[in-house]
Length: 348
Image (cartoon, rainbow, N blue to C red; front, side, top):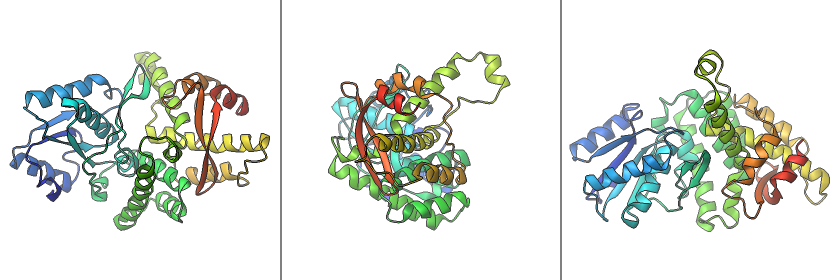
């Protein structure tokens, strides 16, 4: 990669499952080896997205002599970029880092915007920092070997982005995803459009004091869904886990998909009691039909009463108030301050 030419001391952290997944990544791995760049492979899973892994990265950097002029290159999905960016941000009070995202979710969302973090005490991304990478290299060709389920997880974030800012891309993305299209040029255009939307939003509100909150569409619900799913999975006995469908095996993108539909239903419920908030007629049903056509999940396995206590502890909650993002129509979303208790009452 030509972008690495200006950096003298590079240290790479990679998801051990991705380096041989495409010709580009194999070429990159060979290039890193030829330059003598050390590579640490990590456990890039939600279970491994914890401070212990971040400290493992920091220990490895220290043992390999990484100084303040180091560039830490993250190669992998959003979990890898989140943890590597966080480790680089706290190692020696902050060294440079860059990303090569290898999943659709990371290319359109997780690797853009500067958010880093890890899970803590079973809560999603509760520890972290906002700090921008030196660069993020987006290459749609690395997605060709991505399992369909992982692709659809990223597609949920892509659709979320276009619900926030459309420019005609929401319909294009739905058509592309639902048709199981493999045209790389079309995918590249959609990735570029989604990345541009997020970058523009972040550039005017890096630390999420206003407009950047819109990017959380569906995420308050999604994080509660993920937390509950992990808890239920941990409560299952080995025989239960091995003898029945993994009902609580839910990816981040799948939780976001469900969360967006819940946000649309909440918008309609709020509109019914507040005449100043006008939601396009049938919006929730339209989104649900579109998401189903894209083969993305829309039915949450948990009740709103189960989710409310977790939403109260969401990292974005302030004095019990949560900035819920509500879609009014495709391309038009707002934030509304509500308590989790009120939301539970509205969505019973």
